[in-house]
Amino acid sequence: MGSRIGIGCKGLRILAITWSSINQSQPSDQFIQQFSMPADPVTYGQQLYAKLRHFDQASFDYMIIEAPPDHPSWFAIIDRLQRASYNPFNNNQN
Image (cartoon, rainbow, N blue to C red; front, side):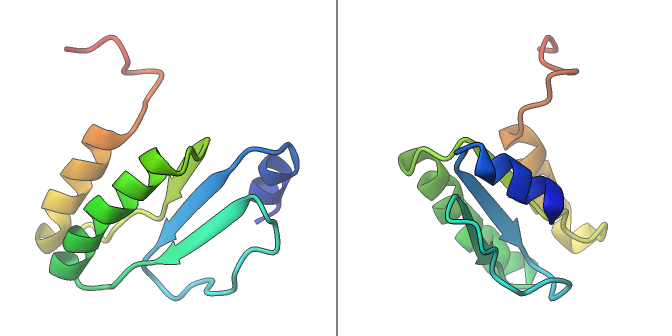
């Protein structure tokens, strides 16, 4: 949590999307918004698109997403998140 607070203190707006109950406490930093997603992959997928649109419309600087389970029922979600993510080390691939 400390590294996220450090980024928030710099005035960067961060959207954190989680699905597990590992840390359900809300961040105390005004620049960090956390959304808890369902643990069901179908419902998660339906809500994910709304969260991605919210990210675009609300001008967040960063989005941090808790990795979904590595299970076949989650593969479509994992694929969508990989396609939506920015990876500076893979940026030149077509």
